[in-house]
Image 1 (cartoon, rainbow, N blue to C red):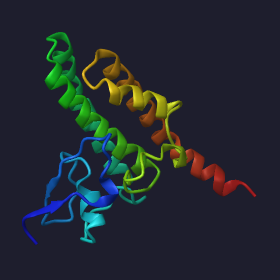
Image 2 (cartoon, rainbow, N blue to C red):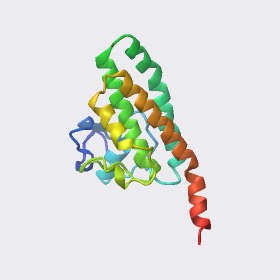
Image 3 (cartoon, rainbow, N blue to C red):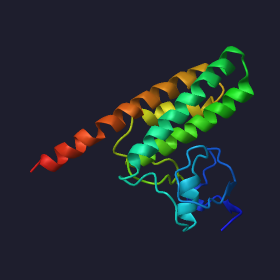
Image 4 (cartoon, rainbow, N blue to C red):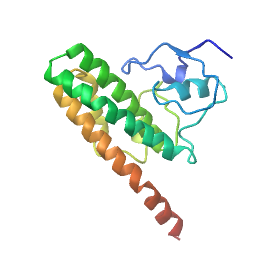
Length: 173
């Protein structure tokens, strides 16, 4: 199948900017450069790489963290140069990666139709709902960038201790 796919209902949320049209992938390889691409394929009932599956989680999360690390230098340049439009676009993309990461670390595809539903996620940074709300209201600000950086650091820590949590749960009677 070639061509494009429309955004599925599960990803429509007026507070989160997402593209309306996505390319249709011809392979089942992981693609990190297009946020939500795997969910778009999944919700359109197409065979796709599932980054949220436990066997794919390691490579998926490493790629999410790498995408953030690649975005950071440009965001810092945009902050110093007071490039508000570029900063807003960059932080928007980073927020999309963060949302992917927070759902994937909980082994779920992103589903934001009825809001982020972050309270239903077991693994998440402290006070994430308020912090993410702050960021999304001020996508072109330095303080939003700093909060997002801290959220990514905490997500990375949460992800790294996930195997320890799982082994403790298996050992509990």
